[in-house]
Length: 393
Ligand code: SAH
Ligand code: SF4
Image 1 (cartoon, rainbow, N blue to C red):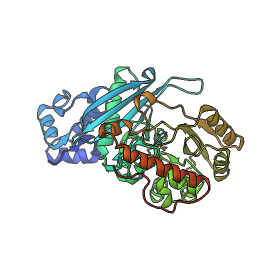
Image 2: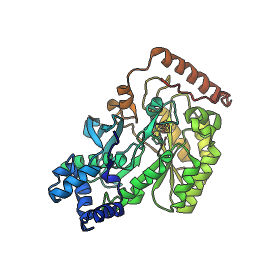
Image 3: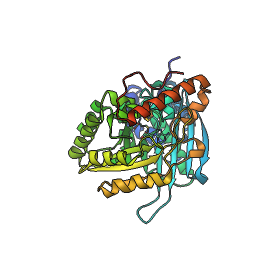
Image 4: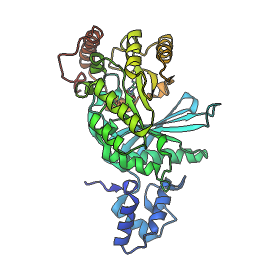
């Protein structure tokens, strides 16, 4: 079966071309886009249910395109309603996750509703603290499969009369390894005739795919760039982000620094803090030295506990101490509260649960390898074994 292309991923010009080919006036493209993106309007599972369109056009749309690439979604609500995690099933049975987080208004800003979207099913990078890395690579998501996660959230927000304010590509997958589709999705997100978000309110996070970071820079000041740093020292980052063996810390930070210089935009560095692994004073000082004088901001995130690793989140006093050391060095630093622990909101956690249990023998082998690898890294040794740390299950 070849799945129909999702209509939300078709750019407006493509839609106009399709309508013209049918002999329809191209202004109908506006009607189709409104039906897809206007709050509350895109709720129908097929074009057949969209009463603003002529009946014949609805049938034709359904014959050519999928009105929604998400077949069904399971919701889990956590943090007293502040976190909503959705596990979406796509037409080929692939499962991906999105997380909607509500932040109340505060003295420093208005209320925010942030959606974390997936760009791939699984991920090839294989960071050992990440549930998605655990799954291995499944496939790239189509542009429409990314955008339909957003339409799903818009519909839920519309019920409460709320508006989506931010989208972060921090769900499953490495967005810079699916860059063309991620950029097409980001364009739809920031198009006033579609999702209409401000470009700064779209954040693309990467584990450090340097050539793709350069492509983002070539776009000029547009989306916010987040870099998953986790460690400033290569031996440790080799373990935490296996892609570091391909593009080491110095290259990743040089690309991010160049991005900040060319675009005038501050780069966000994410540091997931793992107890006793990357949360020492020495690690804080190495990050401070690495980013000294840069247009940068550091986000500290205590690790969400994930099965199959021997690691635990850094305790709150250690996180506070780490943050204080970075701030003392002049680096703007925030601590991100761990959202949705009880709904499994570390990206990929629900999908891993669905994929079935990892055999205990694989878990214990993996734990032993990680313990040995992180101990070697703490002694300052680089891994001699370049094999991925996460074995296929
Ligand atoms: N692949 C991209 C984007 C998706 S991951 C990247 O790595 O940047 C988004 C963020 O979630 C990354 O900063 C990642 O390091 C972090 N993350 C993954 N697993 C986590 C966990 N168990 N606890 C806390 N943060 C985690
Ligand atoms: Fe992939 Fe990001 Fe998870 Fe690493 S942290 S395995 S790059 S999704």
